[in-house]
Length: 113
Image (cartoon, rainbow, N blue to C red; front, side, top):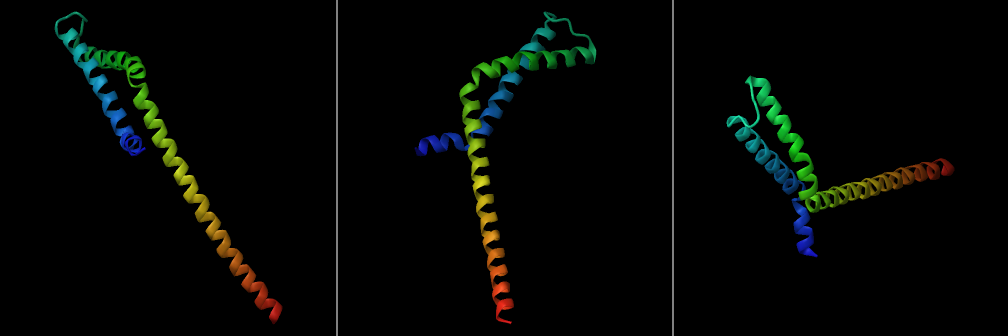
């Protein structure tokens, strides 16, 4: 179980870095194709087109190639949200118990007076 926990520990960082790597790889290929005029590129607009093309190509590649990493990241985020909800519920319960104790003490003091 500890290997499962450690593999999820940096799942978001791992997924994000792999996604960026796929994008940068696609961008390099697009820039090379532009440089060798396989894809006609003219000025700044052409560079923007190549960046958009790299984003368009890298999205489905990331979806297919990084499904395991995306699932690990999702599990990591779900666990953190669940832990946060539990801590919040415990904190609210403790505050309610404290308020109830103060109210009960006030009622007891008023009844004795």
